[in-house]
Picture (tube, rainbow, N blue to C red):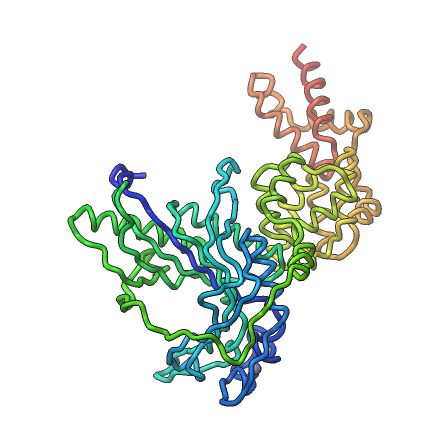
Length: 483
Ligand SMILES: [Zn+2]
């Protein structure tokens, strides 16, 4: 960090709006399917017709309570909805059903590693977790404003963090950990592209030891990288402003991804008076102890526990985090582990080759054409030295394409590793005989050239030779020539 920035501290607050993974909307039975043609998923309730009566979705409550518990929040046993009144074209009934005074959860925290090495464990404080409904979507096309009400009334959970003295880097890891937690709970698909995980941040900068500075909000953050970059940019912009004797204005800024900077949006109006009042059409919701216990029992292993468990098995932090952030991949790994107790070997292949094949094909681990049983059959052969690494890699790719079991391919085509000395000595000798120039340079002291002979042996055996044995035999045969 440049010396000038050292003298300042940052305070960061983060609000995340999550679309809950319910199949129907918050207060009506309309579906929530993403990408449906505009205005095909509506009814008089979510269109805000007068005289209609909203009925809360039980699943949305389960998801929010379970998330609040995972975020170590306290729960309000009796909570209610409030109407947030404002007029905007995306809100035809003139108010949004939300929660102001009594959120579902409050005073929580999330612990996570805020580095790539897994050494810095930090805690981010969470102010509240509450429910609200989404508004319609406005798009502007050829001078017209178009409204799509499919999104109106979709259940949203808002997770608001406390203002934290933290770096942009920590904010980035907080969001990764939050996302991983909600994915593990299965309460949201957390897709930033489809708008089911939306972040707004605010940042204030002040000389170290001084009171908190002026809060600037940042919107339009389309990726976790954008969150980190925008906070880094704002920190530098505000420090430069203060150093130059200027004053930071309270305002909303938008992240411009292409320009890699924030731009001024509208200036912050005096805290808008939304005239909240309790929603009169929905009775208060009671969260019983029994319900809480049932939901607690449903929550599985959380990402931090998973990371610690995997590291305990000997995986490195990168492997542990990669899987903890992708619960279906971690589930795949766990299924493999129940079949073959070789954590490091299995993780290397699951996080490496298998994930790469999945990414290229655009498939989630539940759709992988190679089953855990088939992968572990292959890895058992690798572990026993029956198949070489390069052959296994190629066979896995072919199995992925054809749907055949890797073991079937190996057996049919006789691809097992050649580990018998007699068979290999002959090949090694003929490679030495056919490459006199290479041999000459090795004997003249260029030891590295041995690699070329190893390559020739591998070529002759179609990658099936045991590399350790090849090296040993080459060394033996070459030393005979030196004498
Ligand atoms: Zn509806």
